[in-house]
Image (cartoon, rainbow, N blue to C red):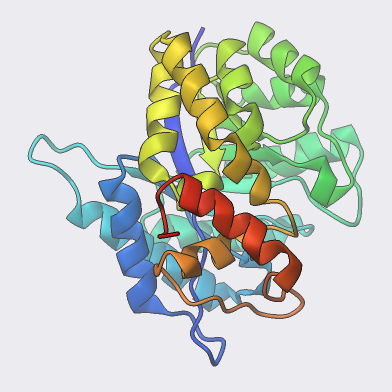
Length: 303
C-alpha cells in the first residue's frame, strides 16, 4: 500500500549574505536548480534550512520565494512541484500560528517536527499534532527525528495520527528500520512514509516506503531523484547502484552538524555563499578536503 506523497522532496538550505540576511536572489536561483533536477518538491525552513534561526517573517518570505519558484516552473500540462513548509516548535499555539502563515503564503503542506526540549509523552505528541492538523486546510507531514528532539514518536502514535484526515505522511529519521517497517506494514491507505535519512532511503523504499525528504538532494537533485524513482519503479539494480554512488556524499553531509557540510559543498559548487547564523559556524578546515574529494568524485567540482 503506497501513500499519496511520493518522490524526492529536498530540504533546501537558506542562503545568507555576509551580513546574515537572507539572500533572496540566491534562494530563487537555488529553487530553480532543484526543480531543473526533477525533484517532486521543495521543503524550506526545516533543519537544513536553519529555520530555528529565522524569525517568523523571514520564514514566511522564504516560503513565498519557494512557492513563486515552483509556480514559474509549472509545465504545460499543469504539473508542478510541491512546497512543504517547515513549521515546528515546542509550543503548539505558536506552531499553528506559523503554519497558518505558511498556508496563506501558498504552501501545499506543512512539515512539523516532534516538539523538542520539553519532551512530551506519546499522548502529548498525539494531541499536539492533532491540534495542528485540525487548525489547517493544507495537510501535515509529521517529522520524527529523536536525535535532535530527544523524543521518539513511537510507531503506535504515528499510526494513530495517520488516521487523521489532514495528516498525510511522516518523515521518519529515527534510524530504526523496525519501527519504520511497522508503520509501513499497518498504515492506512494514502498515508506516506518518507525517509528523513538519505543513507536509509533505498532500504526504506525497499520496505515499501514512498521516497525521501532529502539533504543530499541539495547537491545532487537529479541523481537523488533518479534513485528514488528507480526504487519506486521496482528497479532495484539501478536504485542500488545510485545508492552506493551517492552514499559517500550522503555520509559526508553529516561530518559535522547539518547544514554545515552541505552549505560548504554548495559554496564549493558556486551555488551559495558559505554563511551561517550562530550558533552554527562554517565547516572545519579538517573536513574540507574530505568533503571536496567526494564532490570531485561525483563531478560536481573540478579536481
